Image 1 (cartoon, rainbow, N blue to C red):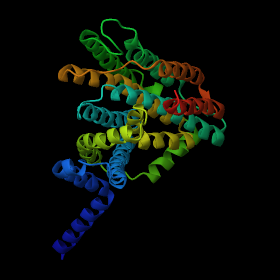
Image 2 (cartoon, helix red, strand yellow; image 1 turned 30 degrees about the vertical axis):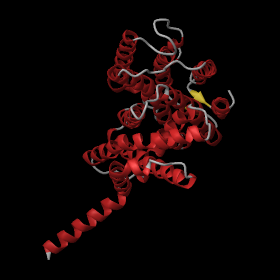
Image 3 (cartoon, rainbow, N blue to C red; image 1 turned 180 degrees about the vertical axis):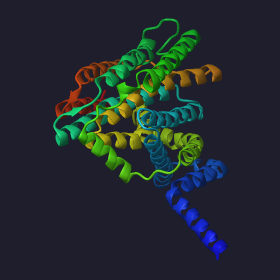
Length: 383
């Protein structure tokens, strides 16, 4: 009887695990199918119905995997506490971003501007759109929200120089033609970005960890309790293992997604930057939702840690990753933004500095950030 009960319990556990991680099954099955039959599935996309089906299939599977990655990262965040939890979430999402950009860069003839377009889209989506939505909804619900000013200052102190040096300066260097960096400049930029991000991690997790923790109040403490109550948490090993299992297939799926994206951009005569925007949207959707939900719960500090932390990680880690790949594979990497995008970037950085110059925010500040994001979307099609 005991052995039968143990077998039944084990079967129930397996069924529960399959129900919880069904999106991993979808990801693995899709990956295997495209590895075996990808050439035939992607050979002819001229049929609009087939093109839409393939694009929707890949987009949906990758998006489900991204949500699952964020779910496990958030579970680790609850286990580890702040700021380590948000750091795990940020690095998980940025890891997926780097893998997808790298895979798409190396697909076919390569896309020298995909990294630049994706990084700029990440900044506009997070610092513009999602920061705007978070501050707007949080301000409408709570009037004013407070956070630790030192955290925003630390983030912006690194984001501003890294963004300008990485996305603006290449337009003005004369060693190479076009918005590119020379090999020596690429090595310098990579070492600088990795080094300064490493210093930031030491500050965030050890020396000044309290900068990234919200001032405690009864209201935020109550919100923390609700967050724990509604989020199911297993062991650290469980979430860490499944986090890796979800990330690995995305490298293959990203290379497959690049094919219909390229075809759709050419067939619809869409702006080339649209591919970078779609990749950024796909990667950031779950994390952006987490940031907005945190702001609505009056956990603005967590929202800021997610949004500004993701922007910093994108600039600090993606630039060296793509530059190193470019040096190894001898591929050209475009980093310098167009004049229009440069103006938008500088305006967004200036606005962010003003927004986070006080330890309280309101709905008006959110509306202005959202306005810049809408201007970015408009200029993408009408520049």
